Image (cartoon, rainbow, N blue to C red; front, side, top):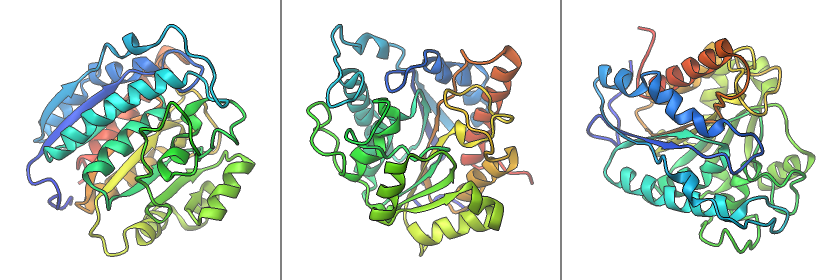
Length: 311
């Protein structure tokens, strides 16, 4: 049974849609937030007893500049920066109102906004990053230049000076970040993870110990006294493509349906979860059945974050 939330006295949730694709090359991921809401997510949360408000941010594409050259290897830096800086303020304001912040992406560069916004309200929070990828490349190490693979380097303060991202503050400490589900990690990212001492549980660890023990160990590392706010950032590509096929960078061998949901359920049970991101749902990829399946999973993950349980 989910505990009362220590940080959120009232059952109020703000769903923030971020229909944004600027951090990676695939179109379609900007459709994810609206499709999740059209599937009935807001109504589902209301039926669970939550007071829901929804901000669609449908005009984000209007922020795309006419000229957005590559700067320090990063693609579309002006667009990514302007959108994430705007949304970060929005998220901070909702967190300050003691609302659970449920952000629907969009690509994972949106984490520049979610983590900045949440940690500006909860500076001692910890971040659980559930993803096939580490997303901690710097402008100096990225091969692709896609910013959805770089947000954590900026948030950790290791990206160096980039003229478009001076607004991003190093709000995240390495001992407050833990990965679950990694299985596609660049060599440069492995080096960063080891050098900073970031706790990371790959799919090897999930296989070895089981998801229950992995979640417990993750919390022991970043929230040992179970008294700090928790922010979950969940990229659906952490799930095996057989579970969530409609995503831009699928990697075989991921979390099962139950393992993904267990993470959300267990974090909700702590009574400490204050924010969750559901990222990288791309309805333009795969066939209609695969899209429906991925959207259905995205909604059920969100419901689990807000207290839905099997019994």
